[in-house]
Length: 85
Length: 220
Image (tube, rainbow over all chains, first blue to last red; front, side):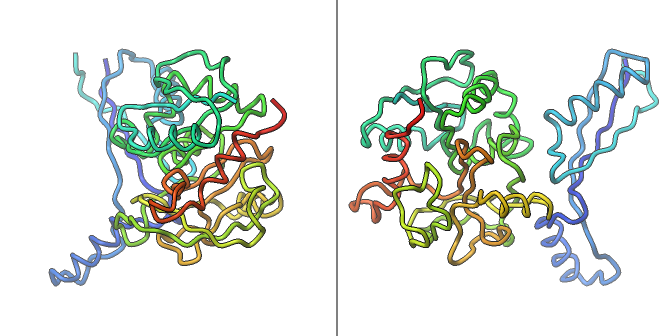
């Protein structure tokens, strides 16, 4: 059993209205050093597999079929180290 | 003609859509999203709303519902498939229409009567309109900004797939796109609601001709 962290973000050319709103809020807070905020999503789930190839196959398949919309989003994932059994 | 009006958990324009197509003379049934056989239907209508609460992304959960397999089959056979608002979002998520719908530029939900232009009346959905005709359909959406790559946009223009545009773009949609059809012209998605514009009592009946076209769809 492995725990997966899947991070989904909008592709860089896609307007991120939430990020823009946060950018404005951060400026209003007076933190001028911060800009280009992009908001994404993170999914955590467990996979009953240990083989990295199989894990990749499952994660990619689900990411492209359901978890992400590859027209506007990109994704990356990592296998978290700790066993979750 | 007999239409399947698909009902997902969270659909909320299903009755309007049903009423509109029945008023135009066709038959219709409400069909549950778990249905696995649509062979008795001549076309599919996917209503607006917030299917599955818009969880993850608008239309994402609906795109993997059992009924979508059947919708794809009907579309492949050249039958009419119309998705309005959330229905349009679902059609892009399924891949029956290109591109995607993202948050309105100002991140506000916009609900108002919208002035639109019929920019291509050479489709089965718009054949009862004049080319360049201005119409009023209500809009009600938070994620109606039509997004596509330059390549897809060029294809849409080349194949004359864009049928409806905003006169006063409410959401940042690329080149004011409000509605389009697939290459074959039988699958149509639009953010505005023609089913809410079928009687002057409701402020506009400009949308009714969409349903008259569907009812008189030839080639079935």
